[in-house]
Image 1 (spheres, protein in one colour):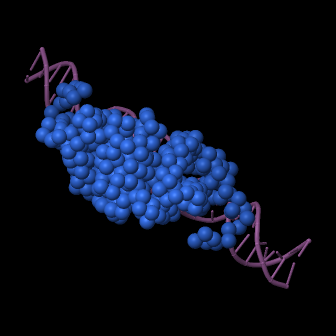
Image 2 (cartoon, rainbow over the protein chains, first blue to last red):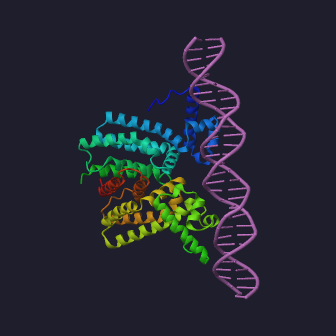
Image 3 (cartoon, chains in turn orange, cyan, green, red):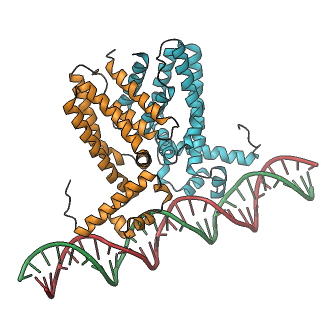
Length: 189
Length: 189
DNA sequence: CAAAATATGGAGGTCATCTCCATTTGTCAA
DNA sequence: TTGACAAATGGAGATGACCTCCATATTTTG
């Protein structure tokens, strides 16, 4: 699944160009004011090429999203290897908020596109979800976190954070959500 | 703002017809497979009429959403009047999950449409947010809930719940999120 | 009841999306 | 290197959804 087909050199180059430009435009938040065809020009390829590589806006978003997820998963692994479980989890969640905050436009664009059609991102987040599940499971094993709540709930909360991009006081509220989740997890009730 | 203009009788009728059909189609989840023009026919009016009443899909969604919000706010008020603050809050949040669960398709459709363009729903949710803020504030005054976390965080969590509609184990996870939020709120740390 | 005001509906213009294929570019064997 | 085959390109044009416009119909008002 990583190396589907040995892409030809120029195809590879174009694909990169498209992804690079996509990240740029996503981040600037200008993606929706842009005709998809024009985006092709902007990236320096023809429309045909754009559509061959990414049949829809969503497909393009998914590809970009993959990169993001990979980065985050790396972070998760590194934290898990160097910190006690509970701290790793906390650090990861806090870090997520930082990350999203640092890439507002991108997060917003991805959230919007993903909402459009179900599961488009579900596939892409699988890895992220696995990382979160691992973090929680380890913390549970350590006895630092209750065991009667599924890690999926944490994913849901994260989903809420990134989906609620347009709230005026986003940063503070996002931090509060993490606080609630972490404190809620701690209490075995 | 409630009675902008005394609408003519037939206009009123058409508007109702559109809203009724919209609720129906939203709930069935078929809204996105439908050309907006065709939706007009389905509701028994011409395209012009549809567009005059609701210039965009989002406008239509917002109108439907208003009804939902009103229902929920009523519930909030009734709970607040009859239960101790903490219980009212808990009951309301649990009830939200029930409500969303009972109107899956509608919630999904609304979430998708709202994600599309910022603040479209922000305006509509104002009342809902106020209700939640009141519930939380009362509970804080009762000393049942910590005071260092904004009610906005609860809204964000709710947002996550309704936005994450396509998760296979939605119901259980949604309940878990509420559990986390409630337990997190309880702990003054 | 006539005139004024308001609302209707659907034909047709506009414009983004996507397809298609003649041409170009890259690859590989000899 | 070169020829031949495969892979990829790009942009012109078909397609179809969205929205506007206005001649006609309906309601209200005096």
